[in-house]
Amino acid sequence: MSVGRVVVEADGGSRGNPGPAGYGTVVFDAADGTVLAERKESLGTVTNNVAEYRGLIAGLEAAAELGASGVDVRMDSKLVVEQMSGRWKVKHPDMIPLQRRASELARQFDSVTYTWIPRAENAHADRLANEAMDGAAGTVAEPEPAAVADKATPAAPGWMDTTGAPTRMLLLRHGQTVLSVDRRYSGRGNPALTEIGQAQANGAASRFAGDDGIAAVVSSPLGRAQQTAAAAAKVLGLPVTVHEGLTETDFGEWEGLTFREAADRDPELHRKWLSDTSVRPPAGESFDEVRERIVKVRDDLTASYGGSTILVVTHVTPIKTLLQLALDAGPSLLFRLHLDLASLSIAEFYPDGGSSVRLVNDTSHL
Image (cartoon, rainbow, N blue to C red; front, top):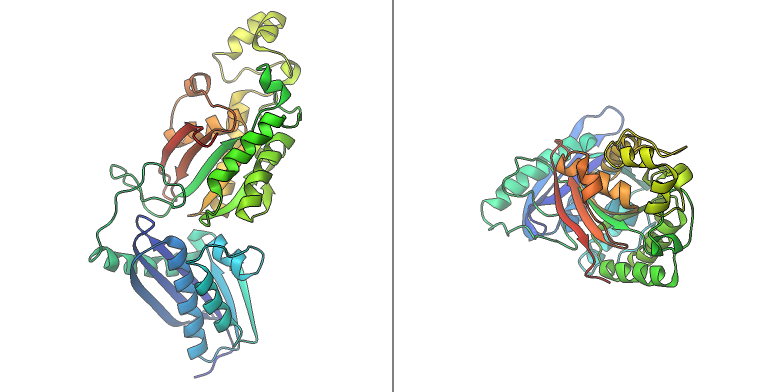
């Protein structure tokens, strides 16, 4: 049998990461969408990334058996797509031989393309992978989820009825600036990191060194966040992607003032602002308005990096708001939660709408 161009959709997963794992892959005729082949296999205990690569390899092998001349690979693993496209380095020892094998298979076709797709568009392969994981779970004991997993996307907490792999956001606050030294309102102004702030950024970066499970580094557009993100991106071998929605609250005319100076300048407005999230600072932005854009940021990131772990470098209010969304908490959280400079928090958002918080305000890396 010989066909022309085919589409390979592949997926892999691990319940526990590492845990009972499996992959699924399906090959379609590129011309009419006919299913030409399906593959799935339980893999025992391996990580998500290993399972995803094994799914890709199985898909390329099936395409070769069909005599395909070209392959369009579509996967919801940004890590695999970027590594196979040559844009990201392969550093993890478990990934190197798998990437090499996939590359060897790819060279036998006239051309191979790699495209990232949202998880929802990869439903056929995802179903096959879950069937394979069900088989693996029947023979392999599932490990307890880590309370603070540093490299792996954990299973959902046992008391949560969630489905699918979450988008795991490592929420890192930027390091110290001259305004944070004196606890001044620092919103859309753009002070650079101090020497201490850069050391804090480097300390946070060291926490992520060698972590091949982080698929992307996403930053606020403001300089202090981008400097902090750049330190982590360097050790991860990843680019920094800027998302405008991750910028800090616009404090308007209170920018650069201390808490007391703002209270003395606008006593009644400042008092209301401290208890009402709809109130704006003079010429500034309310916390309700921040929430609206952070909801869009969350939706953008879960659509772009569904099922992956990403490092999100931003500011106090965006991080508090993402934690608020993950906890389904009221507005009082914004006024009661403290986040240190260069602290790490972890929130997870599931494709079925569920969410969880794994960590808040950890500074053990400093």
